[in-house]
Length: 191
Image (cartoon, rainbow, N blue to C red; front, side, top):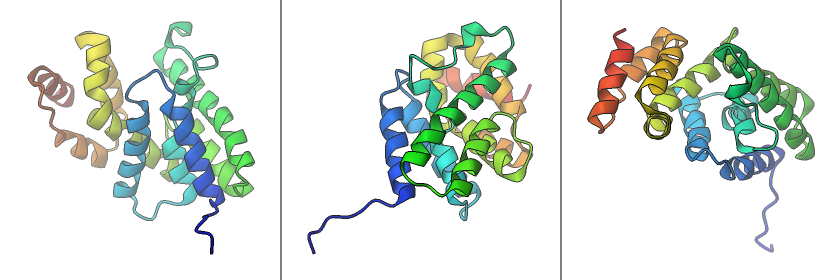
C-alpha cells in the first residue's frame, strides 16, 4: 500500500469549493462557508451530501471578482440576493460535474444554492437558517468593521426576519465581545 488516498467525488467537490472560496476578497467568506456547514449539521445531523455541498458553496460567487454579482447593480436588496444565489448555483454546477458527483446530488445541491436566500421547502429553509445563523455567528464582526453601524443594522434586520423561530432562538444566544456590536444585535432581536 502506497499510502495514497483517492478522493471521493464529494471530497473532491468540497476541496475545490474551499479552494475557490479561500481566494475571496471578502475576509469572512472561508470561515463563513465552513461555519454554515457546521450550523447545518447542528440543525440536521443527518443532512445529505447535496445539503452539505450547498452549505459550503452557497456564497461561492462572492469569491470570483470578475463574475460575482454586485450589490451596486441592483436597486432592490432581495433582487440582488436572488441574482447572487443563481450565480452561485451556476458556478457550482461545473465543479460538481468535474468531480463526478452523481447527477441527482449535483442538481439538488445547485437547486438548494439557488434558493438559499428565500427557502420555500425543508432543505432550502434549513440552508437559509444555517447561512443566517453563521452570518450572526462569524460574519457580523467583520461586516460591521467594513460597513459600519447603519448598513450592518439594516442587513442584520433583514437576516433576522428571515429566520425560522428555531433559528431566531439560536441567534438570541449568540454573544459578541464588542459592546457596540452586542448592543446592535440586541436592538435587531428586539425590534
